[in-house]
Amino acid sequence: MSEQIKHECGIVLIRLLKPLEYYQEKYGTWQYGLNKLYLLMEKQHNRGQDGAGAVGLKLDQPSGKKYLDRARSNGANPIQDVIDYIHSGIAKAKAEHGDLVNDAKWAKDNVPFASELYLGHLRYGTFGNNNIDYVHPVMRENNWRSRTLAMAGNFNLTNVDEIFNALIELGQHPKDYSDTVTILENVGHFLDEEVQLLFRQYKNEGLPNTEISKCIEKDLDVRKILERSSRKWDGGYVIAGTMGHGDAFVTRDPWGIRPAYYYYDDEIAVVASERPVIQTAINVRACQVEELKPGHAIIIKKDGKVSVELVRVPQERRSCSFERIYFSRGSDRYIYKERKKLGFLLAPMLLEKVNYDIDNTVFSYIPNTAETAFFGLTEGVSHYAKEMQKAKIKKELEAGTLTPEKIDDIMGSRPRFEKIAVKDVKMRTFIAADSGRDDMVGHVYDVTYGIVQNQKDTLVVIDDSIVRGTTLKKSILRIIDRLHPKKIIIVSSAPQIRYPDCYGIDMAKLGDFCAFAAAIELLKETGRGDIIDDVYKRCKEQQFLPKEEIVNCVKDIYRPFTVDQISAKIAEMLNPGDIDAEVEIVYQTIENLHEACPNDNGDWYFTGNYPTPGGNKVVNTSFINYIEGRNQRAY
Image (cartoon, rainbow, N blue to C red; front, side):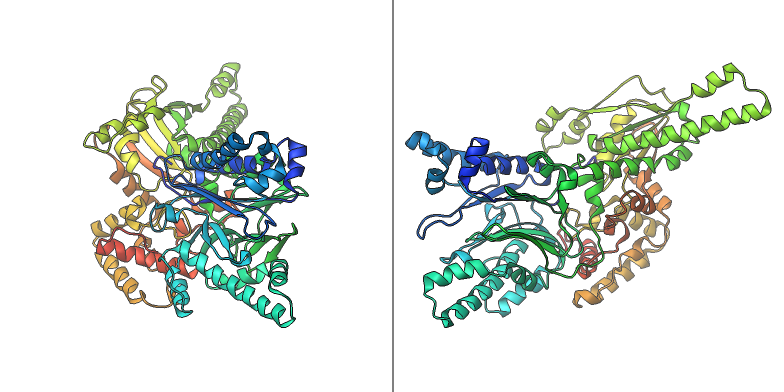
């Protein structure tokens, strides 16, 4: 993706299932869990640069002893800040007490974050701002450990207003209007109710208060709390949390929009947003890492019992396809294969675009994230090139004109695959936001000169997706034009992005999408501006309906035009005008997307088919914001 788009957060939950002394003896350090926390967070750094945080929970601490530690940062290097803060506490204890720090039992009693349970989070800001108060894990503290709650999540809800108002109707006074605070208080409310119910039950049985606390911690029904609190949640979410006494959970939305994976054995239980980070950190095989099923929660009780339980009735699986195309780590075996297939499936379309003239076509990619799709494209083009060679040989053979020279000539025609752009990462820190910025952006990439025949070759460049197109217009097309190709074809391994996301990826404004801008321009040019007015009118009419009754009116903006017509208009609008080469833009098809990613068909970005009712509300609101000139998110 030539333009950087922020996206969903990352979560880590680690529960050590043995005493700290066990890890001290087996691995040489009680910091085994801390080391895994750092590794799992760093390996998911792609999921959040706006902030990071971690909680450490000590089990079975005596009353009056601190049992919960938290570190958060919204600095430039938040993960490192958090880890440095944790290790500064260890270093301080070592300076004061020497080798006692290496004793697991002493460390648990005296060193912050010497814990059996860790909750880590990487954040990007979709709601509110990057104030430290918004950085997870967030906490709801109470003198009762069982009522204390720390939570971190990868989520966006479309109906925060509905849940917020429900809290007010309960008589609460939430301290802020945000999805984070609202979810925390929502879960906290039902946690309080469950604890109070158990308290009354044991009180009626005549147990003393000290015994009641122990019984509550043992018998708290985490599944019931999650089921009751999540009934009204509309959106994509993976939410992790721990109660102060040691019960922990990770719960996933019933559509499976946001990802979560887990692994556990007799030593450790781990949950994270991505499979390969668990494989790397714990050194296990892919088949040992399970995907958390939609609508389910993995629950780890204080006593170490691990269970996966149904929390909400699973709906049609609509896990996010954009995860597969771009955002998730490409080291996942399944994602890697899917990205390759996305590139492979583009080959027939692109060969047709260049009239099968592989001798005068160079295939390449930009940026580096598109490399895997490029590998697939090379396989696809090579496959079809071989088929063309076989067909030519067969034709010559049937005509009786096949000679060794003709065989050499046919077999000598091979596709040309090259690396045409190299990113100069040092330039990023030099570019300032001033009047000369556009000129400097043009030098972020260096090109490989001498591999394109001037004014003769067509240059086909694959990108993983084209969302806004700003970087294409301002820099990349000019950079590629320095090679003097006759024609430039930019191809996206993703289909046209037409609709905003509302489940965790930072694509919430219709006006940002080049496909939407192209459709609007085509409507105006063809004298169909009344469609724009009609869509706006119908969006306004539905504005205050219950979300379940709202339909996506924005689909009508695209309906009059074919994909090719919109692509052609995008190419026209993104052409900077001062380059020599002809420019064409080609997008992946919806059908190919589904073939490449058959188990992850959440395609609302491309089709407008949202998995939850709140999605239709968001897209209509986004259109209203566009027409009324409000540059803000629609949720």
